[in-house]
Image 1 (cartoon, rainbow, N blue to C red):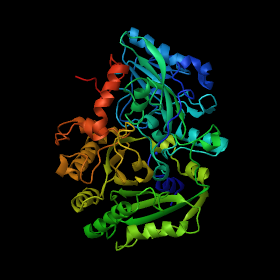
Image 2: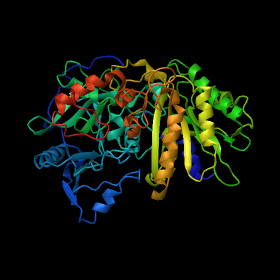
Image 3: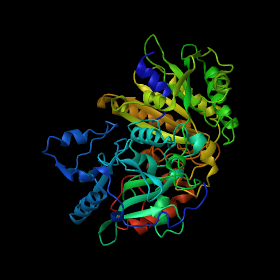
Image 4: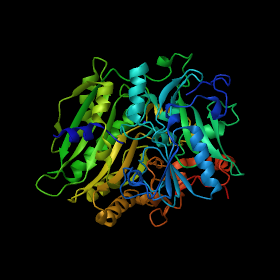
Amino acid sequence: MSDVTRRRLLGGTAALGGVVTADLIPALPAAAAAPGKGAGLGPVRIGQQDPRYADLAVRGTNQRFRPKPEYFQVVGSTEQVVKAVGDAVRAGKRVTVRSGGHCYENFVGDGSQVVIDMCEMNEVSFDERRGAFMVQPGATLMDVYRTLHLGWGVTLPGGQCGTVAAGGHIVGGGYGALSRRYGLTIDYLHAVEVVVVDKSGRARAVVATRDPRDPNHDLWWAHTGAGGGNFGIVTRYWLRDPKAKGNDPAKLLPRPPAELLTGVAVWSWQGMTKEAFRRLLSNHGAWHERNSDPSSPYASLFGVLMVNGRSDGADPGGIVLACQMDATGADAEKRMKDFIAAVGEGVTPAATVLPIGRQPWYQAIRSFALSEGEQSSHFKVKSGYLRKRFTDRQIDVAYDHLSTPASTTRALWAVSYGGQVNTVPSTATATAERDSILKVFCLATWQDAKDDGTQLRWVREFHRDLYATTGGVPVPGGNCGGAYINYPDTDHADPKWNTSGVPWTTLYFGGNYPRLQRVKAHWDPKNVFHHAMSIRLPA
């Protein structure tokens, strides 16, 4: 097994209570806070004739999309963002924003005349005045993990794709390998600084906090899971555990495990019957039904069942279960082995199980994180939450679509979820879905644009057939819990593919959408910040 393959297998996906006093985090204008380390840069305006333009145009993982604005504005401070937005609005130009370039749809490039690029706003530090960690939107998750871990021995329950930037990841909810144990990233959101545009067209920066007495509190709430490009441009996040006391930074966020156990099991497509396939996926779902309570001894276990489609050629490929968990505790290794055995019970042919690995936590996540190049391709991802295991009908649909040999990557992934995530009320944050035990997604990846039509049709039909009994989409109810806005899918807003009669806004935001619309009307009344799946102004 190659190094890259092992990292792909182990790396997983691409992560309340208490009131903070108002005097600790007052809602002050951005100018009252110290500028970040990027404040010396720019602003740098890069137009279409500049040789740097092409580099910025390809700075994204989904190569199906290439933004072609009149210019890119690379910014280094909140003040520069305010000016860039104000200049664009006065000139009547459409503005979009980019932090890490990992958006799954064309929200940055579609019709944009000005792309504000946040890549140089990448500071991660402790803000003593606010008693919270400050993260700028251009910081990658690996930047965040490294700085928090080496500086204070703490971390955030975020994603495992290390090149994803904090900007989009946090505002969409954020989850990862530690979420079953510690919750979502946004469950630690303390405050947020946002550049907004008022009804007169004036751009300004405001700080909104978790404190319900803060007059800007609704703007904070909207940034706990509504996704990016809706209300303004985030220039800083502050994060701390809402249950934490005092201002010792080493006690204000969760501590990661000292060591991780890692395990991999592989079932070959060779000899995999529909009955065996049904047993495998049912076992996996049933285990999560039994073990997704926050008090479960398996709360630290995170697994990804990667049902990779059958390959052309002599080697048909396989179905991979990659997992990791806290290595501390005398029975940790036994628990991981028991998990792998439970998923494979009664499945023939039996799995090839690799030896259990053990690594220090940061070394493990650094080793398993994919590079930008390893993530870059043409792709389409369609997400869903599962509150219960797949039905036998859904499993049979997956078998029919994935057992047919293909030369490109086609897959269904089921990712461990639940635990601490589900202890938060659905209205406490903009992330409404707090009842699921698995995140799942259908995906196709390919390298050549000439294959776009074929691959898009395959993944669209697979997703439609998987949720055929609910109009082709994961309508909340039964075993489904809607979809995840950080894996946006414009097909959910297309009546050709969503025949359920349930609007896409319900799939992603549940009952929280009307409140999000009210926040939109207050903070972005001119609809400056919009894209194909942004929050709409009230009718």
